[in-house]
Structures are given as structure tokens and as C-alpha cells.
Length: 109
Image (cartoon, rainbow, N blue to C red; front, side):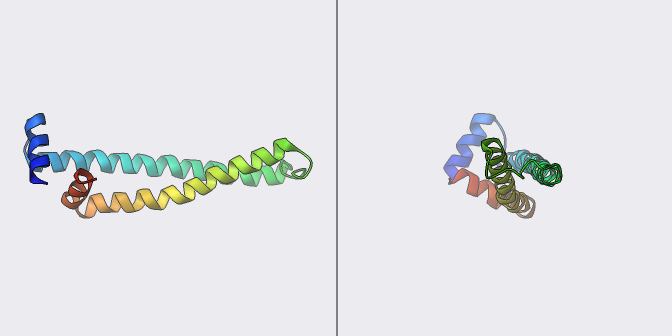
């Protein structure tokens, strides 16, 4: 494990502490962006469902392929958002709580 960190540090010309700080900064920013993107997707799919129900987009779901496909797409994207938001939250919390352990976890994958 130490060899991998030392090789990376030598390759980039940094110390191990700087590497941990840099990885922590990168992954926390990426985690925040992931949360914002999936949060917006969840809000948009929720709005699409509400608006679609009020405007009758899903009323002819038994007769129209367009309604069925629209319903499945909105449902699938919403479920993906519900799955990925907690995963991104747990990962982000891990980077904030212990950047060193998350770096070790990242390097040992």
C-alpha cells in the first residue's frame, strides 16, 4: 500500500499529505456536483409526473405506446435518482469524515 502511494507521489512530485488533500478536494466537489445533478433530475421527474397526471399524459396508458414509454422513462429515471442520491451522500460524508481512509480505499480498489 505504501509503495502505491509513494509511487503516485513521486510521479506527481507531491507529498502524501498533499495527495490526500487533493483527492479529498476533488472527490468532495464531484460528490456535491453528483448530488446537485441527481437532485435536479429527481425534481424534474417529479414535476413531469405531477404535470403529466394533471394534463392527462398518462390517461391513455392502456391504449397508447407513447404514454407507456413516457411513463417508463420517467419512472426509471426517478428510481435511478432515488438510488444514486443516498450513494453519493454516503460517499461525500466519507470524504468529509476521513479523507485518509477514503484515499486508502480509493487506492486499494
